Length: 250
Image (cartoon, rainbow, N blue to C red; front, side):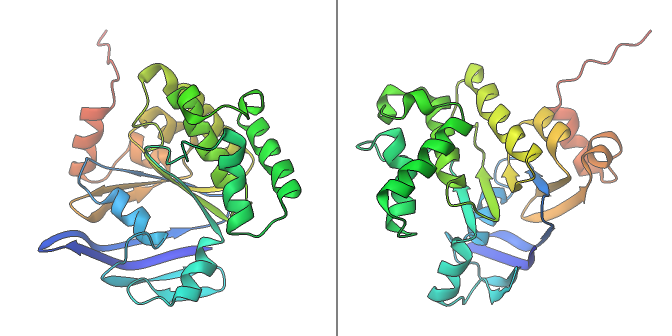
């Protein structure tokens, strides 16, 4: 369904991505883990053409293109198949929750306003916020704002949704409500690529876990393989430092 090959990206002399490969099948929940600065977010942004890669190819359904030299028409075609959930919500502060979800449907998809409103209300109901549809972002908690962001991303019925650390800007007590929504979408079979530091979520939901460090994929496999039997020492070190598991010796 989606295949990225040999993706490279540098900012000045600093090489962020050093030949990253990823293959995603329909219905997969791919979770990308790794320390800060490992290239996770940059890779995600390259896949959605928010950053232009220096090298690499993308195969996405019927699309096959260079990530470095894609035509504008191809980029628009690819983006019509994706949704993106940002770290910092990226909502319009002067628009209500309903209007934020409607915006892309009306302006980018050219869907009539009444139909867009019906879709937006349905999406807000799905994320548990229909009763907040007339609230502005400043009147919502961080968790509620991110749920509006998720509703906006899934409203056009995309083939793939990208999540860029969707809980990193939230207070700890608000993380659960956002993860619950993402888990429900996973159960419904939505194809997702999720960059996150939420280890228990990754272990529970991911069909494929990708561990990145230093701009490369160090290891990939099922959640069970990566969390219970990682093959690479660097993966083991990362998991030991991040998984807060207490081992009791009897």
